[in-house]
Image (cartoon, rainbow, N blue to C red; front, top):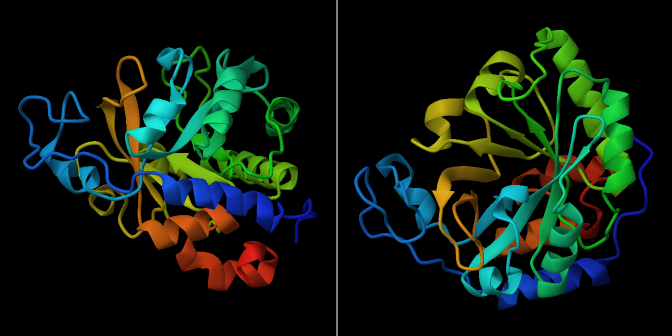
Amino acid sequence: MLARRPFPSFSGLAKVAMSALMAVVLVACSSGGGLYGPVQGDNRPHSGVDRARGMPIQGIDVARYQENIDFRQTLQSGIHFVFMKATEGKDYLDPNFRANWQRARDAGMPRGAYHFMTWCSLASEQAAWFIQNVPNDPDALPPVLDLEWNNHSSCKTKPSRADALEKIRYMLEAMERHTGKLPVIYTDMNFHRDVLNGEYFPNAFWLRSTAAEPHERYGNRTWTFWQWTQTGVVRGVRGEVDRNAFYGGQNEWITFLLTGCDARAIASLGPTGRCRSAK
């Protein structure tokens, strides 16, 4: 078992949960969707993700490209959570991370930080960089490890599956030790197919699928978050933004806020010392 910091206090997490209960449950959604023409909340909708628009717990993920976000407006519009880019590799810090982190907290928006894994530096270096720059806030969502091939960066290294998995597990353990929460794994179809498919992880998964439902692209991989478009439109955010849906309803969402765990996994994770406030 990992040596973990004490789990965040129930009272601190309860405040976040109460804020979520006060948020609007339903987001505006399209009645038709489809491939042609914008719908409310998405500039380039795909009929394959029509179900996502009507799911009750909606969120966004952001980075420097979204510039100055008005999180109060975003929360009032029915967005329930935000994941924001914090770090990448061993030495990159998103220039908007610290401002986004504080502004989202001030607005009462549940927020979490993500680290973009690169394959040209050691996992130990990346873990140290994440720990140096991401606060261990008791009221934060679990951290996210973003796992993709680095096709759009200067890093063209593509490690073997075994090497990639070794780095991933090291990073996940370091992030959990730092925050006291089991990290979420974000991934896309290519990386999942090449590295993660068939591998067991206790972590919740956040899957990218913008033209079909996740089970059509990832087989039997259970998902907690679904990134369903990259052309979303949300009040309080300038320009387009990635939009995401949580798998469950208000009860499951409150459980996630209070425990950091998917409600479906609490029975198996609880005995390991995780999800402590659910006991």
